[in-house]
Amino acid sequence: MATLRIKLALLLTYFVFAILLNSVGTVILQVIHTYQITKEAASVLEGFKDIPIAIVSFLIAAWLPRLGYKNAMLIGVSLVTLACLAMPLLPAFLTTKLLFLTVGASFALVKVSVYASIGVVTRSNAEHASLLNFIEGFFMLGVLSGYWVFAAFMDPAAPQSAGWLQVYWWLAGLSALNLLLLLSTRFPKLELPKVSHAAEDFLAMIKLVYRPLVFVFVISAFLYVLIEQGIGSWLPTFNNEVLSLPNQLSVQLTSIFAASLALGRLAAGVVLKHVSWYWLLNSCLACMAALILLTLPLTHNVQVAADVSLFSAPLAAYLFPLIGLFMAPIYPVINSVILSALPKVQHAPMTGLIVVFSALGGTTGSIVTGYTFANFNGQTAFYLCLLPLSLLLLSVGLLRQQSLRASNSL
Image 1 (cartoon, rainbow, N blue to C red):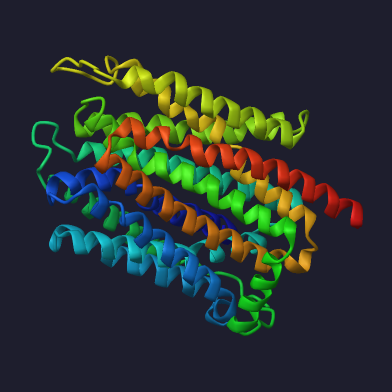
Image 2 (cartoon, rainbow, N blue to C red):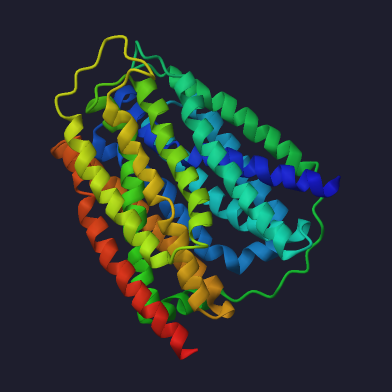
């Protein structure tokens, strides 16, 4: 029973953060209308989320084991609960920035703690892998449901209304429930390993970058997340401004992107048993480029009915988010390639690099897409994804070359 409660606490914690972390695109769309700010200004929200994740994740190894995993989760969930309460009580763009800063910093605490706690409640490698995959799957369920939860509080007839902020009362309640579950759940006492100083961790990470294999990987990770976040964060606004769809429907249709990512990762787990990762990624990148080139022309001069609904939206609104199907396998696969090619003692600093460069890529993608969207148009902003996509195709080839060289040297 105690183990079941711990698993439930971990699942609920991840579910809450999935909704909040992936609400950036929806919130960007809403703050532009509600607070009358520019797209360039709204694009910084991605940075307020990602940069704290990178910084706190890097520093966490030095002191989190002393703090304790349960305590770290309690701190993270408590901060997020307060931040959610502040959104409707102190409605302002500054409050929105502080919300994502809090969510990002708290997620760094939570992710490390959740992953470490999985080993406490599982007895075998197979059980560990099963629970980890289930928790990540539950995370995607949170992402999917988040679009619909936010859409339920939006008024299509009044896009500038601040009524959507009422969703944060519900999210604060869910976080408070999660907090109570964590408080009432007894976690086993852990034998914690000794930790190095943060400066030593930083030096270890820097030394890794000098390796050609790692250097190529961080470029690949940066480019991938730049593309994913650039599309994911601005797709609701694209649906609204380019396809002329109501705010609520724009957010609902963005859930196709999240569903495609989830389905693509599940399918890749099966396909990779029979196909080389290199050829799978090349195929995915080619399909992404083809979908961009074939779908975006359909978004010009779109005419929509006044009573447009979920089932009568323009064809492009359904087709473009399917890019997630082909995008999905890339990030997990390149992470697996780099970790498999390194000794286990280097996995911790390598994970730090993964988090840091992923966060930087996500922030850059959102800001660049937002700037292009504002100064040109939505089609140009998404066509621009073809540039990092081409560079990613090149870096994946270099990654394969370096990983083979590393394997041969073992």
